[in-house]
Image (cartoon, rainbow, N blue to C red):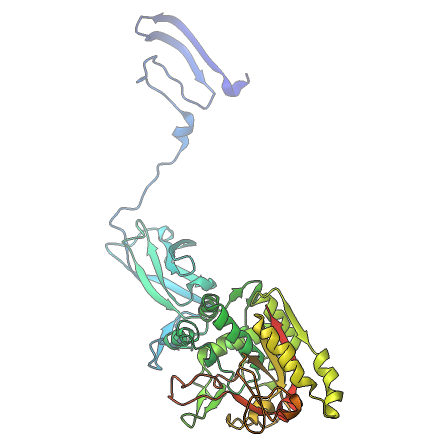
Length: 462
């Protein structure tokens, strides 16, 4: 062994006895091992440790030194009070830094301020558990960068302590939902309307060009209500939501929009003869999804940026809604144009033999039409500034071909009118009464030429 493990004893006289004790008269004792040297065979013998001798004694803070109060130095930001009052409340917002400091102590201040430690606590809604995070910050002042999306829409408990984090200084601070100007109570009511209360048809694009998004989310809420609920709530609260393999993550421009301000999309409600703002959850889901795909869309009435191209509809059907079969048919419609010019009823055949047949076989169907098809419907009373706009609607069966006597007709040549059920603009329905206004809701009724002139293609999901 080297010197590090050497023990040397030089003694004049060493005596032992039966109980294991050793008595000696030593001239020289050396221990260079760095460990303990026992000089008595008994277990209670004396020991010596060089490493222990070198350790400084640990001094804990007296238990009377405790943080009493902490305060927030940084000004909080305004957002919805979330109580349907239209009022505001103050809170932290995602992506900002807030500074906290110790305001007072219970007894006396610690001589060394670096002994003050910090932590935060909040209830993680996604995991349904409390999260406690001990921060690296030390001292009387702490800067908190709020970048945890799960804290959104929750109270955050900020704590500073010397000895016990459970009994010392705490400050409860609200952190706004990511769409901080949108009233949570209204948003929740709208989500329930579209799912648990069975009214997905309330989804409304208002004055935007988000008709394709309206169709996608109508099918989402109707066919997969639980998935829609989670998606809508996550997007509203955290600013990010995922369904199947598609993640919606709009930019900060949308998060900062205030629906009470001028420029927020509105639509004319013909039942009460006044303009109403776009439903909050429809803006969040539809504008949020469109902005994710095209950041140039800022959530207003920008027509071109909001257009829902067929390739986008196809992708959302697969990735967002999770359908395995997604097909769009242009060929049959395009092929029929020349025939229709010479008086053919090819599009009526497509509607009955392809579209309606696929619907009855379990497909979800979206029709690409010209907006004038529904704008000119005798009982819909819609109007457009430009009647040549493409428009997406959801086909829902109920097809009837009627002759001039309003009797069902099998011969396309004798068909005068067409009846069908569709979803569009949150109003046209086949319900006997509108549940909000107690007014009868019509089917979509068209003249034969209206359909032939304004139908372009159909998209099917399964």
